Image 1 (cartoon, rainbow, N blue to C red):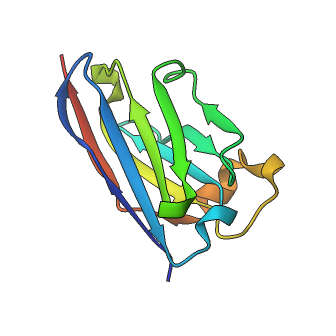
Image 2: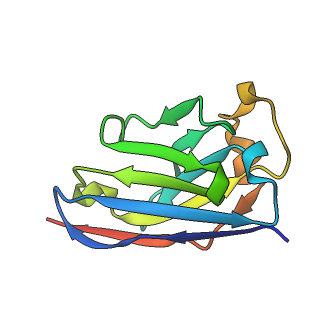
Length: 129
């Protein structure tokens, strides 16, 4: 079955950096778009970033644009989220997700496909001020 396993979270200070990883198994990774979501206590889940199957197209929420970078290594079945200049507002559980089906590149931002797709267990990121 499909499994997504996130790692790399932790407790850091404002201004620090973290690199999250999400390794997938049970699917042909290079054929699936990948996304990152986050959810802070008492807040709605936020679609943070996405990358198309070949890594050509990327998306960032305004809240992280210019600070976060998404990338993928299809040979290692892994997607990364490099997070720089972290602030306390970035504190959340971060999840990677992928649609349950192969989609054309033009649909890599179809959020509903991720929401109904496969999810990892999440990794906690805590940024202290």
